[in-house]
Length: 127
Image (cartoon, rainbow, N blue to C red; front, side, top):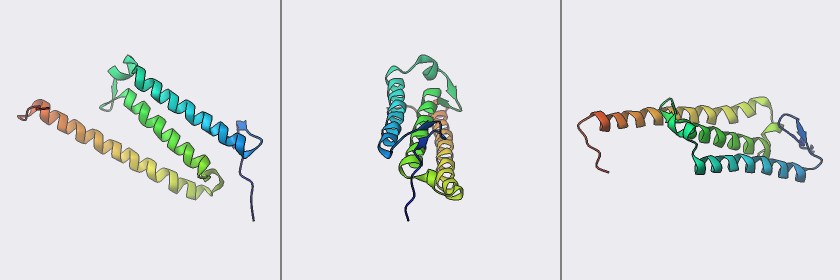
């Protein structure tokens, strides 16, 4: 009982003739996203570093979003989630998205609290 894997990516907009071509296509997509991350990390554009959103620099938000995109796409294509039932896909994808969002929320608020304690409190920066 074997079934063929789907040879299209990006919801069918790009189609390949074989699994080998598809793997190369996914590798190229992941390489482009990683190159964007590295280029932003090296250049650190002033507009992304100077501005903040919910207590964190926009550049850091870009890194988090691009990392989640890569993780989702790796699971979607290489772990064959696209071939599974929608309920299993949702259980696998939405659970980590919720947990990562919750972790980011906790880290941001705790870090902001500690920063304000050192900035406004009686404890001095000694490092």
